[in-house]
Length: 127
Length: 357
Image (cartoon, rainbow over all chains, first blue to last red; front, side, top):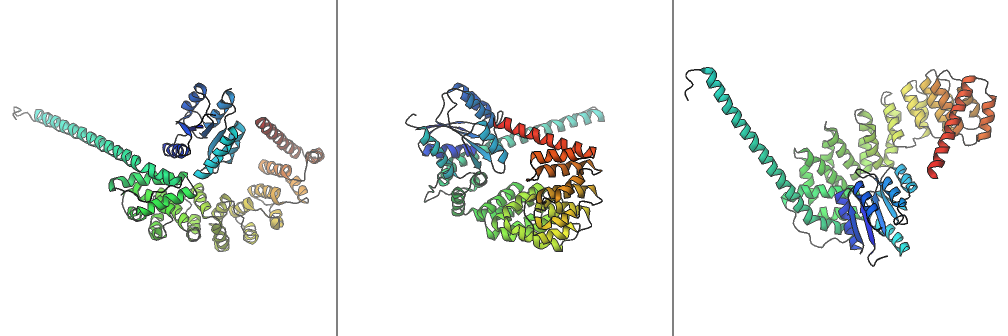
């Protein structure tokens, strides 16, 4: 792992993407943000794996379930921890996210400190 | 202007001039709208650039001691961002956002916005006051809740629930039972936030409700998945109104009402028998197996189907018991129905196993 852990944030809501980027950069992570499923797919295929992926379920063009499947199918990405952001009251999405290969999930609306704690758990394991 | 005394020529000329002027006016109006849109977008960008870092820092627990002044031109854009963040975050982050809004005096601004004519401002104000839990806005929000515009009124109702769940449950529950035009999904979504007070209010209201209001009240209880006291439901199960009985049967969830449910298995109305079979599948005991088996030969397909599902769902009937039961059935329709439901169960199990693999 590099000195600065890298996190890929896939989130289409511009305000939430800003909050996530701000929070993570403040913790010393290097953040790459992509705003839709198509860009995320291209990133997974064409870029080196980050230390962690924070992935929204509902995305334009390609949804989060498909992207997590793509991540697990790439040799260099397949062991990357993926935390999915799912909406409240969608237990089915949560089960689908875990079945698709996500390591954990965060329910929206989320608590920033809880999200950071979950992230740290995976990044410590990776270190 | 000389048209040689020809009135048609004169009319054509002036019509052309008028059309030209109107086109020019229209062009100018489009230009004005575009300039105004651009200016609004620039203001929004400036507002976000100035306030986003402050709100982001507050969200992670780093609220600045001194806040800059919020300009009048920034207020609406700021409130939009604030409301959006409140809807996406919870816990300490929400409290930090409330602190910022309070220090900027936005509870006063939001109360003023509630009284304005612009719909967007009223909606944003109701959302903001709900998140702030502003008790002083209660009378204004009540007035807004009574308006014909469903979006405005439902947003105001949501805010009332956020401010005081107990008081809101007492006010809203009768209103939601009365207003059949409000979609059940919205009603349930709002009442769910009120939580436990709704159960007490609903239970207290049931004995006093007119028969025509009972089905909606029971449907609300079902949508909220609340367990009403057995005595309230016993009266509804004994009703002569099919809509009331079916609505009550859908939410029965206690063995205390087994006899009341069993009494409805032979009801004349097949919809009542359907719901009674389903209810018995949830609350029945071993003695109800024979009753459900009898319903497998019902003249209505849906009754036979639900009775078979209820049998298959009984926890103490294992697969060999069901196979033995199937072998004993003499009625062809009853045997076919049980075989179909068993096959559906096999297919569902196989699908679940495939998904897990």
